[in-house]
Amino acid sequence: MKTSAADLVAQCVIEQKPVYEVDWKRNLVFCLFGAVYLGAFQYWYQVNIFKRMFTGVEKFTQQPVMAKLRDGPGLLALGAQTALDLGMLTFVYLPTFYVFKAGVFSSVWDASEWVKGGIGSYTKNWNKDVFDVFRVWGPADIVCFSVPLWLRLPVRHVVSFVWTAYLSFARGSNK
Image 1 (cartoon, rainbow, N blue to C red):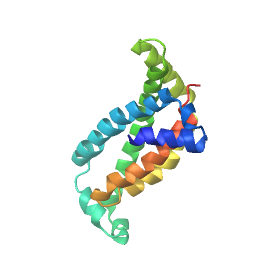
Image 2 (image 1 turned 135 degrees about the vertical axis):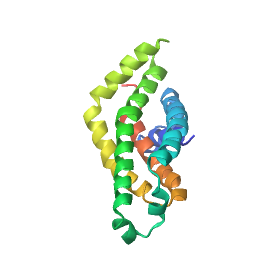
Image 3 (image 1 turned 45 degrees about the vertical axis):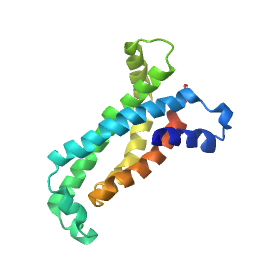
Image 4 (image 1 turned 120 degrees about the vertical axis):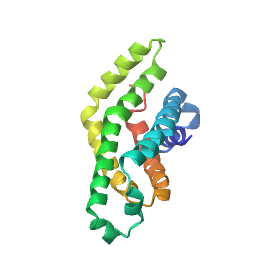
């Protein structure tokens, strides 16, 4: 629902389309992609995998800022979590988005064509997309992985909503 709403914000507010001109196929891209990648996969890897890989982060996230700045192992884990997430966003999230988009907008039911088209779009937009991922998600990840664990997902959801509206505006249409 969040990604569908973010797309509607992009189309109706940023692009100023009236509701009767909304591109519902485009909205479907964000609805499906949001459910599969953001709803299922991202939760699984950021909660289950990160918990196993980065033991002790709960202690780091509960410290005051000045104590965090003196916590070498905590800062190292923060950097590693940020690097891992930026890698996932670059090499899993973006190509997955483009394959979903290619599938929804495709006129054929051939998954190999969706992958081919999606990877083609991913490659074409690589420089700008990766720059934007690092520019937005680098600082956001530092905040997300520093706040207390109970606040991690709410912070991520806010950034994700804004990011998804941007992605919809920049890459959502079938062009």
